[in-house]
Length: 85
Image 1 (cartoon, rainbow, N blue to C red):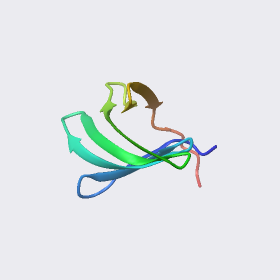
Image 2: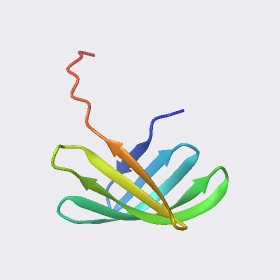
Image 3: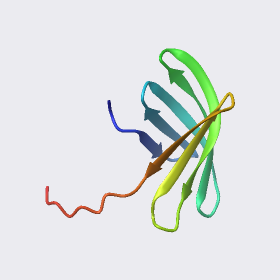
Image 4: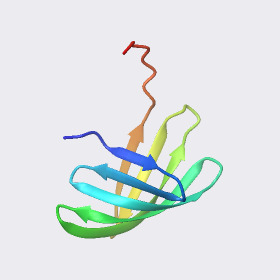
């Protein structure tokens, strides 16, 4: 399985994918939080919802998705590896 992906692009738009779910995002911004609505597909079924991504004091990020009363939370921390490519 591919790792979760959360991309913020230009013009208040973004994309996300994790598991079988792929969606486009409409974004709004706060000082340390990005709010979003999303629409996409999960195993070929159309799905929609909303959520937010919050930058935490330790540099990690929590991304929360809401859909029909369900909640999914992704936690990420930047890889600080100094491995040369």
